[in-house]
Amino acid sequence: MPTSQPESGEKPKSQQKPPSGDNRRGAIAGLIIAIMILGIGWWLARDLTAASKMQDCLMSGRSNCNVIEPAR
Image 1 (cartoon, rainbow, N blue to C red):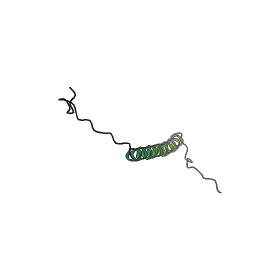
Image 2: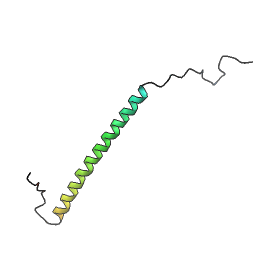
Image 3: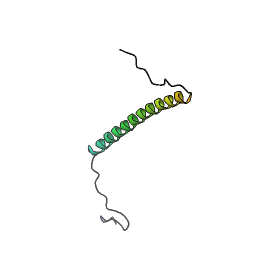
Image 4: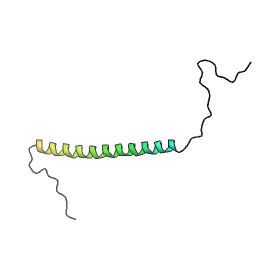
């Protein structure tokens, strides 16, 4: 005999709402955070590479290690 009440240990089933714009907002926020992390990582890698090259130059005993920018 079917009953409309849930048995012990079961939660009553509720109707599922269709997906709304909230899940898209979270995905966009995650994408923005990922892009920011990649940008910071790229900047940090370039900065550490430049510092490493400067240290290598100084450790070799040279004194003219400054980067000279060409005139435009």
